Length: 326
Image (cartoon, rainbow, N blue to C red; front, side, top):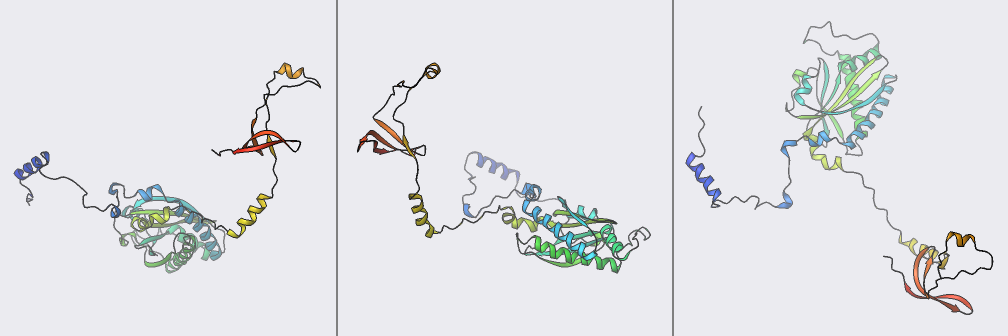
C-alpha cells in the first residue's frame, strides 16, 4: 500500500529556502516554563538501574540475614542465605531463562505501583521438601511440558513466600513502608506473560543453601516501579542539626572568663653564631635589639600590641591596639 506524502517536494524546497533566509522562524523553547521542565534522556532509560542503588543493596543484605533466620526456624535446620547481587534483564529474557517448573509469584509492593516477581526455583523447593519430609525429588520421569509441583511443594513455596513478605517489609522499613501482596502464582513460564516483554527488570538474586542442597530466590522489580522513587532511594542520610540549648550559654561564658592563661611578650632579640654560643660563660652580657613597641601573646597567640615600660616599680606593657585575626 502506497504511503501518501505529507509534503510535496516543492513545499519541502520552499520550507528549506525559508529557513535559510530566516523568513521562517526557527526559535525553540520560547513558551517553556523552566520551572516545569525536566530533562529526560530516553537513550539511557536504564541509567538508574545500571549504576546501582546502594540503599537497596543494604536493604537486601539485611533481608538475607532475616530470611536466613526465618527459614532456619521454620525448617529446624541450619541454612545460609547470601545476597548474590543485582543485574538488569528484560522480562522476556528472564522468562526464557526459567526452567519448568518454577514457582513464579506476581506480587504488589505497595506503595509502588505495578507488578514485581518473587521467584523460587525447583531446586530450592525440592531441597526444602526433601528436608521436611525426607526422600528425594526428581522431575526427570515426567514427560517434557507436563512437569509441575505437587500440592506439598506448592504449600512449601507458599510458606517461603509468606516468610519473604515479612522479612522484606522489615528490611525496607527505613526506605518506605512496604506492603507486599500476592496477585497470582504460576509454575509454567509460558503462562506468565503479564508484563511488557521488553520491560527491564532489576533482578536481585539470593542463594539459599542447606546441608542437602539448595537453590535460588529472586526478586525482580521492574524499572517503572523503581524510577518514581529515584530521589528517595538515591538520597544520602543527613543527620539532623542538633538544637542549641541557650540556657547553657551564659554558664559556659562565665566559666571561660574565669579560666587562667599565660601571657607573654618578646622584649628583644639577638643573633649568635654557634661558636659564640659555645664561648658563653657566667657573667657575659648579650645585647638585645629591643623595641619600644611589642606584641602581647596569650598562650602563644598574638592578641594585642603594646609599649614596654614600668608601672609601680615593675616592668609592664601598655596595651595600645588589638591584633587583627586576619
